[in-house]
Amino acid sequence: MNELLSDIKACDVCKEHLPLGPRPVVTGHPDAKIVIIGQAPGTKVHASGIPWDDASGKQLRKWLDISDEVFYDETKIAIVPMGFCYPGKGKSGDLPPRPECAPLWHESLFNHMPNLEFIILIGQYAQKYYLKDTAKRTLTDTVRSFDEYLPRFFTLPHPSPRNRFWLTKNPWFTIDVVPVLQSMVKKIIT
Image 1 (cartoon, rainbow, N blue to C red):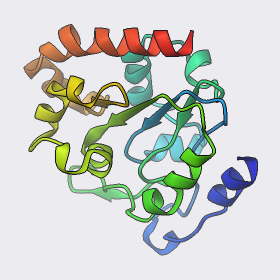
Image 2 (image 1 turned 90 degrees about the vertical axis):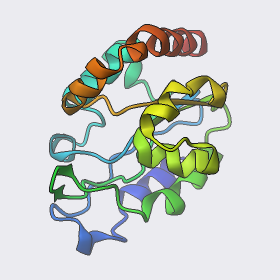
Image 3 (image 1 turned 180 degrees about the vertical axis):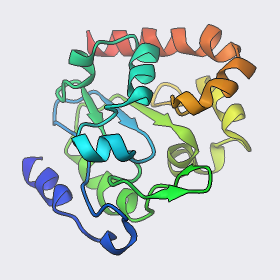
Image 4 (image 1 turned 135 degrees about the vertical axis):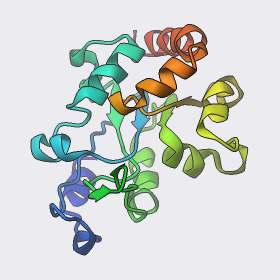
């Protein structure tokens, strides 16, 4: 696993497309039981090199009901985004994750995590990639149907502060989905 992570952190396959240059942000450990698959690091995470080291990460840890200590314990939780590097700015936020990372690295990473029980898919890119034809037409419908993907996958919207409107418009998420997520995470990591 250490050699694989070193290879990933040295990856520069799509460097010509990265405005801030390559800085892959990923964690993994053979003992990890949960993997979180989000989109790609933002500028703050690119600068720190620490996954989910931003407002989105704080919200995600609230949804999971775990401390920073547990979240960053690689023996419990691996963090493997769809794109490992900051992809750049688009018209309405960051660009989509680079398409090279997931097909190039995910399978190898997961092969090094034999204890993996639970995959949390955050946002439409992770959900479409992993759920394929079983993903619903919209992210909202996919998240609302989270129980169809259990026990292997759990679907979440992005925890970005930009999604406040989505959370306000969809109160069922906090009432019905988050408690199930918290219960499952607690059961797996304790």
